[in-house]
Amino acid sequence: MRAKITYFITAAVLVFYFFLVGSRGVMLIRHGTPVTVTFGVAVLILPVIGVWFLWKNTQFVRRANALAAELDAEGGLPVDDLPRTPSGRIERDAADAVFTKRREETEDAPDDWRTWFRLAVAYQDARDTPRARKAMQRAIALHRTSRSDHPVPSTPSAPSSPPGEPAPSSPAAPSSPSGA
Image (cartoon, rainbow, N blue to C red):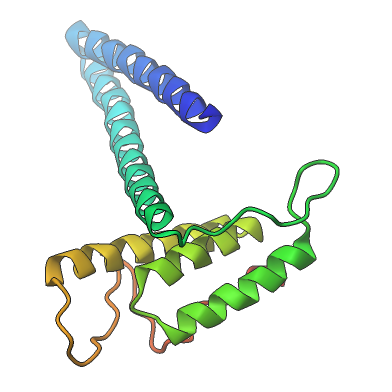
């Protein structure tokens, strides 16, 4: 719950900031000289990029939370029982051990969004956020295709990748977290 409150407060502050920057851009454009119009247009681009970035991240979080809720309803959500350091961080050796297990599960079932979701959690526990995000994007994409396909028993298809992501060449696509 604390994370949601923090996210909403941060988003509200960003939207306020985008509004402030956008209004300054409009004021520069209204001034009417070639230099101020150029600066005004450049200043207006910043809030547009910021709103797009905020929207994409909000979509990602909503989709990941929907997958977590579905996995929790199925009883397949990973339990957070890893040992922690006095500062609250997950112990690296424990995270690496769980990661190895999750990677093997994903290699055994590369078309199952559930294994990719659990792999994303393992990457995050191992403090490899970029790979955690990519694994979660993969889980979201697989979940979408499994929903649209209405699975019928047939031959397994090649895993699809999210737009802009290269498809893995083999089921061994997951790699160990950085530094492991």
